[in-house]
Image 1 (tube, rainbow, N blue to C red):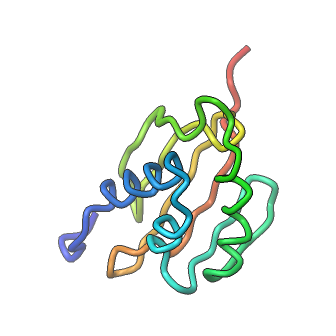
Image 2 (image 1 turned 90 degrees about the vertical axis):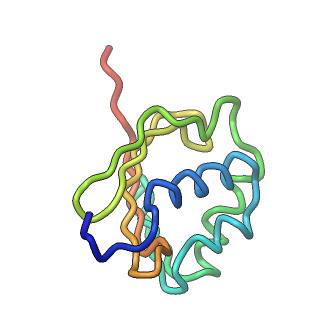
Length: 116
């Protein structure tokens, strides 16, 4: 990360997963920038608070047992990666990028393929 970064990116991701785990939709949406984009595993893209709410509301409503449990969390150039159990309990990796104020600007998730 750059010295100019004045926020704790890992802390923001921890707040994000906590909001997911606790089903706090408003708190989750507040972590995103107003024009944030979410690219989900199915190739769909959601932009802005109303579309993010449309994306997240059903995922937080009935999460599977063990969902939103962290498997790995690590900084990377330009952001943070999080490996966790998605709303359906399946392993997912999400890459987070942030704006200068520490709001989530962009996330992209992909399923994690498990070895047989």
